[in-house]
Length: 298
Image 1: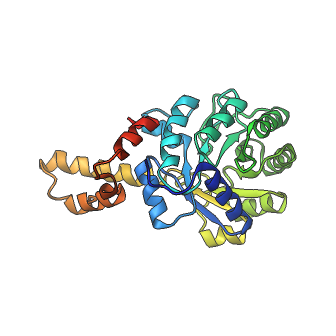
Image 2 (image 1 turned 135 degrees about the horizontal axis):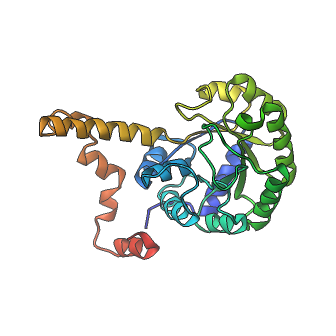
């Protein structure tokens, strides 16, 4: 029992309708369900669930080591806790795009993106990536489109071609991916406004921009991206980076000082935490807690 008002179908419909408004939708990354609740409370448009963040959270690098089971379990938890649409990183499709699409749709996601790297993929902002052929990727896209049951489940296609083949080949791939049925194109590792703009001029569908820190792309403002004609912006690792920096600083302080008195003012208070998890709504002598457990959250 999450006290959310919308089911998965309604969230997908909201996402599609919001895209039609032609405004930039902001999707910060959530590294856990509590973070997703905060994203919703602040007023963002949706929640992004990063495969890289999930790998990091498991203490392993983002090189295709996670499975559909890993990602779906966490994505399902995150998607359920708010009325916002959530989109998830499906890497290269986990070797079976049909099963991947069906799984994420059944788990309440609003959409997912698949990318055109080989199965042993790398982070989109690292060098030495290898791509599958355009024809192979087109087959994956068609398989994905055919697999969905809800037409509002968004098939997002990411191309990593810019660092491998250059912008001209990237645009050729984008046109082929659009023709195959992609709802949204995610051009990875665009370096600056000129490259983002060139993609927009040569694309007919919605576009997603990745504003990850410490990567290949210049960090552009929401206004700049909106003016370039982009429809979605994700901040995939931002919340995890903020959290882990604070955790590291705090642990070092405790290790050095022997107490946490010097860092109390940097912590979320118990009162604020209870507000965010809606403690009072759960603190009633009825079946709410039982309902939550039976949904598979133990």
